[in-house]
Amino acid sequence: MSLSRYIKSWGGYAIRHIPDIANSNVYDFSYCALSRNNRWNVQGEPTLYLAKDKGVATGEFARHFSDNRSQALAKKIQRRQIWRFTAKLNRTLNLCDLKVCSTLSLSDAPYCFRDKRVARSTANFLRSSLKVDAIFVPSMVFIDDLSKWCLVIFLENLPKDSIQFLPKAQKHGHIEIE
Image (cartoon, rainbow, N blue to C red; front, top):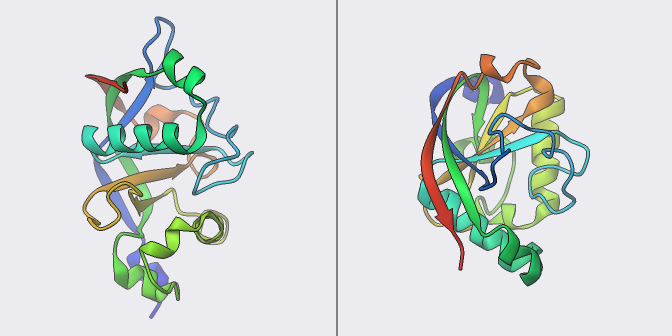
């Protein structure tokens, strides 16, 4: 079965959290290629991570502090602004759909994505070979509930003007990690 039948346009809402400081800009994606610890991209690949809702965003943010950040840094940036984007994407693939994972010959999905090498290899193939705009992926916090997704956006496959694919952003409160 061809993977192309699963590539679909998608429009909806997704959440981003950013530092709660005065000069924060929700459309500033300059940090999206800097991390060496991301699951779905390697350093140098411009990748924006969004969440289905505030609960998923909070869970993922808290998980990253326990996995990847020092306590000193955590205390400095524990309060975050939540923004809700309206998204309009032309080429998405849903890795929360086990039929898609089977077509990709991924065994033990979604649990195989706990291995960053599997996640990064899968994402690299989809972003480079199939030129998808974004992939829906299982939240590592809620891995047993595939309705709780993260949206991984491959910025190099989209227009430079992010308003074209994220036309609206609305402040949606705060989260705080203690």
